[in-house]
Amino acid sequence: MAILAVEEAATSDAGFVARRRRKLCAAGAALVALLLSGCEADQADQDGYFPLGPGESLGELRQQAAQALDRYDKAAAAAGPSASVDVSPPPWDAYNTPPGFAIQAAKGDPAATRMTVTFTGAVRPATEPCGIDYVAEAVESARAIVVIVLSQNHASGETCTLVGAERTADVNLAQPLGQRAVLEVQQGQPVPVERAPITK
Image (cartoon, rainbow, N blue to C red; front, side):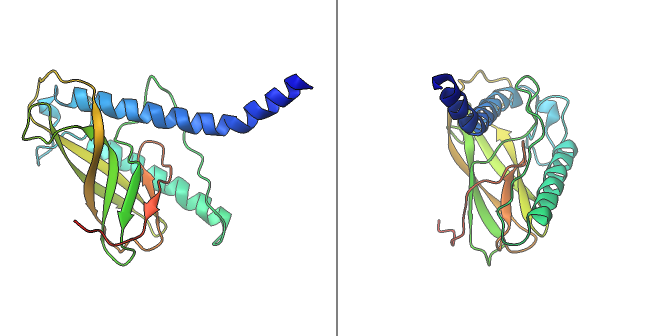
């Protein structure tokens, strides 16, 4: 009986543990990406931003975002208008993590076409050694928004510590935020959204 109770408790907590593991792996991957992005000056796009690691492209990241939107839109259509949407993420491989920064939260006025996202990033801005600046772009559907965060380093080749801090970036939207879900790009999972005016 005691073994059965332990197995049932472990089964009920398995989803929580899996979600927690994905979040920790995503945060670790983001920090590693911060460190590595400064070493590849030739990967910068025309604006000087370093969106991904070596061998990856912004086009690949946009395609990944479009796939996340497709999964969400299908799950939302299957769930119906009043049900909560449960999106199955693609398989997670800690040794081959999906590219991109995983945002943790978003805030925006439902009637506005701008929102702010929060994520783990470098402690300092790009004007300081080992600092990084961030910008974000949105890939949108009628039901959801996937946010891609791009980074610009202080300098390439710097040796920096893997210390992270809460950072934010503003995102311009093609349509008002409304009641759409906001998804992180790595696994396409919804993040908490505070629907309120942004004050800065």
